[in-house]
Image (tube, rainbow, N blue to C red; front, side, top):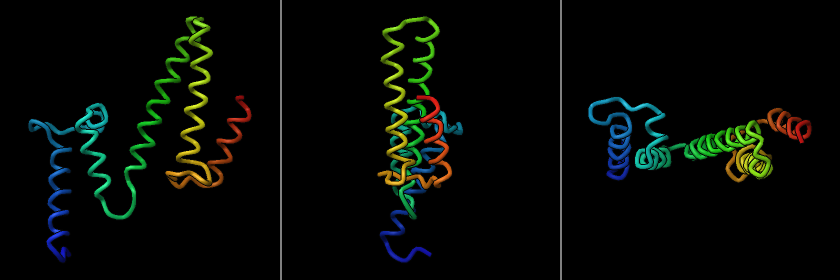
Length: 133
């Protein structure tokens, strides 16, 4: 139950943000619409920050970094297939650096933005890193 004016204002703010995120020109928005649009993405991030019970924006931050990693990896593979060796080497180092950064930010035991991965997941990641170095 909403007990004070602050909670009532927050409720209506969240409700309004949700309305903005779910409809545009009478059309329902998809998550792709939100992630591809700078303004909508910003509103969605603000909405996630306003939700009670934790920092839900961490998941969005992880998702964005994972998508960027995927794009970097795809660029690397295209360069590799076209035998563009100068781009290939820099792309390999970039993909490795991005993978390490994602791990240390979101997955590691001492992650600064932990997603809550268990030790088994971290072990699988470590195994993959060692095998593919």
